[in-house]
Every structure is written in C-alpha cells, then in structure tokens.
Image (cartoon, rainbow, N blue to C red; front, side, top):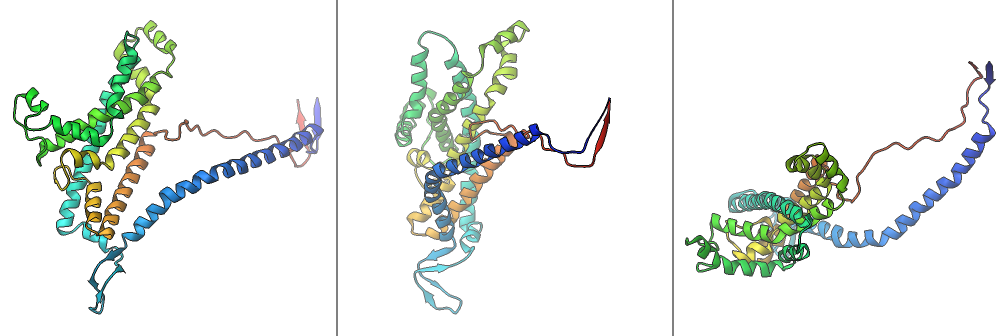
Length: 341
C-alpha cells in the first residue's frame, strides 16, 4: 500500500495546536502571579540582606578620623581610601592577627562539624529505635540545643573552672579558660555538646522517611546492620544530612558568642574573624571592621558554593532532576513525500 501526503496539517494537529495556546497563557499567568506573591518577600530580603552587604562593602572603602591627603594637609571625617583597608589586613601585626583568626575559625569549623556529624547521626539512630521511654530520650537530647548560647557559655565556664567539675572528673589541674590549646578544646567541647542535637534532629527526620520494607528486603538478602547502614541508611539520609552539615558550617564560620563568654575576647587561641571585626568596630575603626566582615562574607560564600557544587547539598528542599520537556507535535511542512509499506 502506498500513501502520499503534502505536509498539510490535519484537523487533529490543528486542534492540538489551538489547545496548546490557552495552556501557554495559563502558565504565563501563573508565573506572573507567583512573581507578584513573592515580591514582598524578595523586597524584605533585599532590605535585610542586600542593603547591609552593599553598605558594608562601601564602608570598607572609607576610613574615619584624622589623616593626611595627597598634598600633606590634615583631613578629618570620612575619606575614601580604596583597598587600603584590605591590604592593611595582610601586613604587619594585623596580618598576624588575621591569619591567627582565620586558622582558629577554620579549625573550629572542621573539628566541631565533624564531631557533631558523627554524634548527631548516632543520636538519630538511637532516637529512631522503638524502646520504652523514647519520647523522654528525644526531649532530653534536644535540651542542650534549646539553651541560649550565652547561658551555655556561662555553664561551661563554671564547669571548666580550676576547681570545677571537669578537673574533678579528670583528677588533674587544667587551666581550661586560660589562653592556650586547652581553651580551644573547651570551646570545641561546649560547641559540640550544644549543637549536635541539631544535626541529630534533621537526620532523624530523614530516617523516618525511609520505608521499613527496604530494611526487611535487605535482611532477607542477608545484609547485616553495618551493610544496611552504609548501603541503605546513609545514601537515603544523605540529602537531610548534607543540609544539616551545611547549616552548621555556616553557623560555626561566624562564631562569636561562645568563645567570648567562655574564654573571653582578645584571646589569641580562640579569636575568630567575627571577633576581630567586632574589636575593630568597638574601637571606631569601621572601615577596617567592614573589610574583615567582607572577607568573612566571601569566605562563607565560597565554602557554601563549593559544598553545594561538590557534594550536591539540596538546600531548596527538592531534588533537581533535569528532564527535557516533551516537544509538542507540530505540523510538518515540506515537500510531498511517499511512504511505502
């Protein structure tokens, strides 16, 4: 049988094309409505986040107080210095203080996040088990996270006193709150104790979304508890775990209140980038403080970008699956063709 056609659209194709036009209008209308409803939130975010960031960067390009201009005359008030506030950070005494604070910030971030992740996952696995008193255990685990950070710092300062509970348990005299490596360990212990339940709570939410049938099938196949954890639990709970770790990293990178209350300010062993920025601002050196804050902002943004890109943290709450939209059948225009069957 031989059929010939000249590419003229049929009635079915014409009806399908006409039906697609209102659908496109509906999609465009939905997008406009969504943009209109989101505009107040975006405006608030621009005022709360965008304006302070731009104002801080602008402040970092100026200096206040007395100084000399290019002609040697004394200039008072605010004057434009360009990138001098940034270059001064990396030279002399300021350079030593900056790299010390940078190292402390990175050390606290890596150490506390690793320990909190391990302890938080263990907490989640315990809280998921069915046993008597599970509700009480969940509530008691979340208590440290609910305590304000300043109160937590005062509590641990009392524990780490020379005659406190920590030395009584160790039966050894350690000056925890003095400047030194032991002060770093005190901050790490207090931070891990307080924020491990946060990771445990988010991981527990991810564990409860895993169907029990998966574990039953794994048991039938002969998988033990360790194999179930590495092959089932950890891959399926990975989205929630990555989001929790990312939030904790961003929180520790701007740490200020816990070391300030527990150890004190101007202590080199626990001084962070946020504490240096605060110290500069308290001495009315707002340009230098803004430069420190801008560098910290860029550092945090870089860490967050690399974490999302390399590990694929799903920070918007949905897994992105890039699928191509099916193309609509369009009428084929062309020369007359012959199909032989």
